[in-house]
Length: 535
Image 1: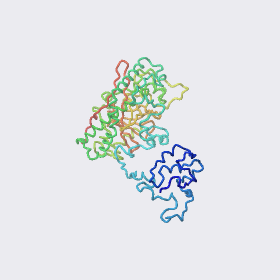
Image 2: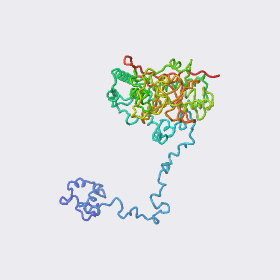
Image 3: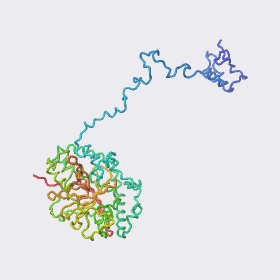
Image 4: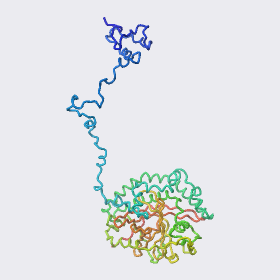
């Protein structure tokens, strides 16, 4: 006969059967449904074990409910090291058990980058790309015209390439609503922080020119939303394709080949879209550069820039080739456009002109020597301007320079110097040419605030132009006189004698007169004419 629940011994002492109503159970109503278990079962129903493990009082809990871990289990610090079972096969200390780690995982995280090719194994002679073509800290310091050279420029040189090319300085960085591509309208000039000082003493015609120019840029921005987004989405693929073609350039230097012509057309299509992006990001934000007041306050032109100039933006004027070719004493019949990176390429110490190797000592060195040896010319001035007002005696006079009236100047315009691939423009040039072929003007870095005069010369035999920034004779800029009449043109930047890069000069359009509409440029989609091939 099966035993009743009342006859079973209890681990927690004598226990009153659940069928007795007088039992002092903590939950009297709970045991009732458990008495209906089938009589044939030899063991108590599974749920009757729970009351046995839940004592009525707290002190009975340790006696009636076993601990999840054995009470006599030693702690990790008390584990035996030599007499554990299987000690021969198991290490004595947990940290020394590497066999438990999954085999595919590396043993050390720092070893993971070692799978990449070493720097010495990477190609360094890719034209126009790679570390071999990029300026180092000293190059960038000299390139920006910083007096401290490498030390002063190292902070910028060590930053990621996206940041210095894509971000203006904090003091000049527009707010989010004012950044290019923002759906929020750009603030009007009179709403900008510098408006009070900039507009002081200006007449109504000046204000009208500023307003018309801002309205024209706003209309252009609204019309370019789709084109801007498309260029952003296809930029990387297009640029990588161009770079791949350049790496294979050695095999198709002949200008008659269709693949060479297709590459040149694709490159100029990209350059055109890149120039449009530069205009998107500059708009009318830098219209206070290189105007009459800028020249009067730049430092080296103090007392030489006359007051009362009729056109405050005379230095922004674009000169067509027909005017330039007759202004310089050496008259040119046909313009020479050099397509740097295509018709003229620099690869390490080698130079190719129209696909043929040339001696750098005879092609490049003389031009660079002209730029480094050129004396600093006076700042360019309109020929009809009144005589410069001498600096007050209380202000130290600037270093002596040739009188401004000794040269008659023609402005070539204001240009943003931008990398071909991408990046915000923050380096600007004003360039002018004299009748004798001297190059004068100014350089302004809106990222760091540096500004310097420029000095250079036109090689009248070849129409090529070279100039430097201030007294920096390590970085020379090269293009042609005809290139400087275009809205978009490539230029060669020489960092020393063995590192040359191709950059873009993008013209900043002149503010239109008050009685004329503001015409904004449209980037060319086709390359300029090729120079004639020498036999």
